[in-house]
Image (cartoon, rainbow, N blue to C red; front, side, top):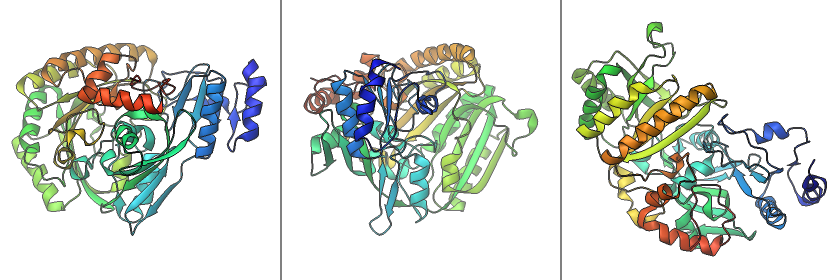
Length: 464
């Protein structure tokens, strides 16, 4: 054990509610493990917090001992920012309670809760709030960057449904932030990431979402990519807000509804959930089928919580991952040419490109209402994701993702992106470009709440 572990860790344990682990303790290796197997970091101490007071103690301990701080919620940070070599990991995994008030249509989720826990608790009352598409993602990391998913066309981003937060700041204070309490801090955490403190509780607005939804998936060969994207462009322009569509360049899943000869075949997919009527969903599927008959398709009623878990296995723990994000205004002919040129070059069956449609409720929120790192104009958030079983394969698909992303810059909205999709987290110009005119305001708020940049393992905003 290090000198810190011999002395300081013992002192921290005496005041801490949760477990405190050093490198020689049982459970340390499990506790330091991250979702992205490509990140292998060794904190000097892991503080498994059970309260906001624990988080405050951990922050002050790290400052007193000169330790770099990392904050672990769901551990899904592709860039590895959830941990740190030789520093202190604030582990929120035991601070994970979710409570729902069905009458007020509100939910409280602790900082270490996972999306699946929030989904299940809300759906017990026929309610939901917009969240991501992989249920073992942490609520905190997803929300602080914005939070987009299947419900974003209908109800906006996660941050658009955030009512308040409890946050531990760099000086150890425990503050509440909302529209009427520390409103500058509340504005900043809605899209500004983990730059301003450790959020230990989120309060969300909930909406009625029936426990059973309609689901459809349609799949085409690689050489039909341009036709798929043009068809999607026409259909998405007319979609009601109750229907969403994700456009994907994926490999066909080894699912029972897919003929074995097509398993893992690369191609293009339209993934179409509907939160309205079965007839409305069927009409969208029929329009696409008539315009461009798919290689195969699948349609079924599905529990909402199953939709939220649909991508869990393909994005499970233990893969080696990397991603790049971009924004597009539309599927222009130039954008389609870039996509169809680069999609076939991926090597791993798990690697993919996904395009989320953002409009309707998403676009009804003014650009400057939150710190979110994207325009509220209708468009697409693009994700180029390398998901590989080995580090050797990741080396190849990382270069694929980088070259693909570089080609999107001139046909999209430039180098800025959704900050939850920046693996190269130390590239300052991308962070600045993502926030645009909001960056200076964020830097000023950062100087108020974290003037020494204690919380910098993120898409970092430097104090003014």
